[in-house]
Length: 190
Image (cartoon, rainbow, N blue to C red; front, side, top):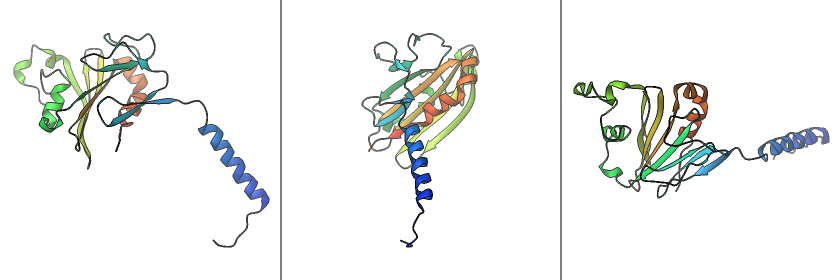
């Protein structure tokens, strides 16, 4: 300690600033935490998002109340799914999961000209490699649909968590920051 004393005015200003910060921080929650089971990853979604129907083989969908998980949406819809087979995955196989195993969006087979591959455009692609996590994130367009797809593998458990945030091109352009916030909000629980 330096032995300096704060004047009552300086201390009062600091308390006022901290109180204002506390009031802002203690407001109504803006996000909720979800954890796709049995994965060890968590994600932040807007507080307004709800589960859209019952979870099924494709995973669990979240969006604004009244949104449909199975139609082209004007608002972002989030789909989460898990798989225990991360040890058998590669970057290529994770990319192929985004297309239901039909093709690799990064390196589509030229023979697939008459299929969904010809209607799909890869907008952005990044590989993720961290000490406890590896995977990828990519953005695709298929007609008027934009999909922000992410596949993360927990190196400790080999669990794979897939997240897709999808909506129309107009929605994606308008909500790009929200979509990025969702996809980058992941945390690996210990």
